[in-house]
Each structure stands twice: as structure tokens, then as C-alpha cells.
Image (tube, rainbow, N blue to C red; front, top):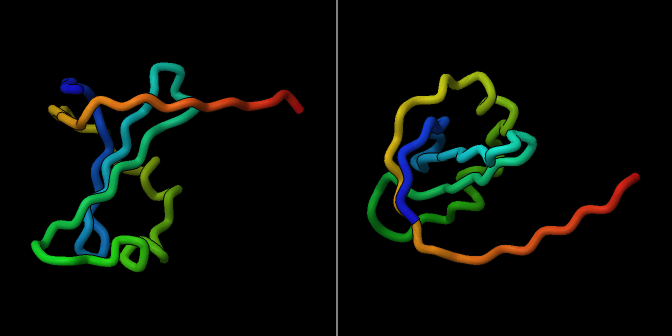
Length: 78
């Protein structure tokens, strides 16, 4: 999948964090990737990351390419 979009991007503990908001804006996809080469324990790097801080980042124009995949999600009413 390749798309041009507005995205929020942050760097934290040697990882880049990219937020792609879905069309309805109630959910988003978070992609985390290392900024340095070599093996990086990503889960350890983002352990203290404040996800709410992403909402304070101004979205920028971005061209994003990721492999195509299928995902199922189901939610139930309260």
C-alpha cells in the first residue's frame, strides 16, 4: 500500500513512531521502527512513551509505503 497523507511522526528513544489515522478518525494505526541499524528491542524503547503526546504533534505531509495486509476488528456496543 502506498499513500500520500497527513501523518503524525515522533522520534523517541531511537525509534520513529508514525500514526496513520483512519477515515473516521476514531482509530489510528501506530507503526514503530528503529532509527538505528542493528537489533533494537522496540518494546523496551517505547515502554515509557506517552501515546497522548502524539495528539500534540502537528500532522505533516508524508508518503507512506507498507506491505498490503488484511486485518479484522470487531467491537461490541456497551
